[in-house]
Structures are given as C-alpha cells and as structure tokens.
Image (tube, rainbow, N blue to C red):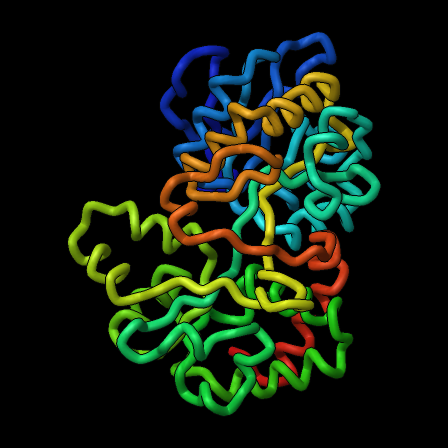
Length: 347
C-alpha cells in the first residue's frame, strides 16, 4: 500500500468525508451509481466539483500522476477506476501511451471543449487552463523589454532568468511546444541560449521562482499563472509585498505571433471502467457552466469553455491570446524535449 495515496468519498449534495488511507477500492458493478475517480489534482477547492455532481457518488483516490498510472496498470482488468484526472497534457499523454484511455463520443464534450484542449480522438479532455507566463521584477525590468519566449535566449538576459528544474513537466511541455512549433534543431538552439541565461541552479517550485524574483535573485521568472494569482489573493503581508514587486507578462502577443503557452488539467475514461456511462456523465459535468466557474474561482485557473466569467483576479491580469497548438502535441514531443534539455545541461 502506497501511503501517499488517499481515498475520499463525496456523497451527492453533501460535503466530503474525512480522508482515510486505503489499499484498494472494490470494483463496482455497471449498475452502481458511483464513479471511482483517480486524481492527481491536489486542490481542496475541487471538493465542490465532486459534491455538486448529481449522477452518483464520487469515490476519490488521490496521488501523484505517475503513481496513479502505475496503480491502474498493476490493477489491470480488475481496476475499479472509472476515470483518471490529472494536470498537464504531458501526464495525459503518458497514460494514453500506456493504453489506459478509451475514446469517448459525447456531443456535449465535443461542442463545449475547444479542439485545442482535447485529444483529437476523444481519449481525454481538458477542463481548465493555466498559462505559463513571464513574471518580472518591476524595479529591474520595464515590461516593454519583454516580448516572446524565444527572446529569453537573448544574451541580454544573461544571469537573470529564474525557473525550476528540467524534470518539471510544466517545463517539459513548454519545450515540447517549441519543438512542435520550430523543429528539433531550432528548439535546441533556443535551449542553449535560454539555459545560459539562468540566474541560479534551478530549485524550488513556481512560487519559489516568483518570490526569488521579488527578492532580486533574478530579474524574471517563468511560472504558471495560478501561482501568481494565489499570491495576489493571499492575506499574508509578505505575499502581498511579492505581488507589489513582481509584474505579470503574457508572451508572444504581437501580430503574427503564436500566443502564450497554455496547458490544461484534464481527464479521460479508462478502458477497464466498470461505470462508463456515469464516468462520461461526470466529464460532461466538468464541462458545465457551474463546474467551469468552480475551476476558475477555486484554483485560479482559466475556464476552457467559452463565455464563462474569469475569476476577477485573473481578469485583472488582462486578456491574452493563447497558442492555437493542440495540447496533445506537448506529449507527442515530450521525449524529444526531455532529451534536448538533458543535452544542453538544464539541471
């Protein structure tokens, strides 16, 4: 039994029960009004997504993406899991490559989820988006100096860039998008210039990069938008001071440019799911207006469904154009991205 994996049950219209450690969920029959959800989303605010589902009880197993994928593989045809929900298209790709997902035909999902945020064959769907943005020290950088991800390889940024390690899947997906856009040779050339501009050896998480930028350890940082939003909403005076010192910038917004890199949190129905109809109903529930607002308000993410009001703090960051590249390309080019990152010596 993996002590990092927990189970919680959400009753229809109720609050969550206390989390308990479990080894295995029972495999339910096809008639059971329950959905067994394996999720690597570790946000308490997601409880509203589960308790508001009217199609049955949600049995939630939580863990890291890799742990859950391995668990589903080891459980094989006896797996009780109906759905896998995780962050980053790269993780969804990994599960897809293991043959875990079954294609879903749903008019609701096809109509509500934009093409670029879902698998071309309906194996998985994105339900929330997060932009990988540039944060800058307001005292050291004028935003007019900023433009594109590509420009971050310019020697003018030597010793000024803060970012986490190459093992982080957010960074792997960012580089994979460059591979998809420009090809392997040009992506490697960019990586050589980009890594030469690091302010320090990569360490910490996205929040750590933003705080280091505020402290003047570097002039600019790369992080997901919702980390900055969390700091902006915090009542902690230290976090408020960070936000006062650090500004947010959406890259690649000029005429003819490809737009800001945006990744997703999403999920799909498993091939061995005992409750496939209920599982599809839950995915459709995540695409509803109400759930999309939960995503936006609960974890400071962008809704993927058009017409949903953005969280006020996110809205204050300004409108931006996102990359039109289908997010499945992040997974498709992930192995190449990782190899190139290793070749240029990105720790």
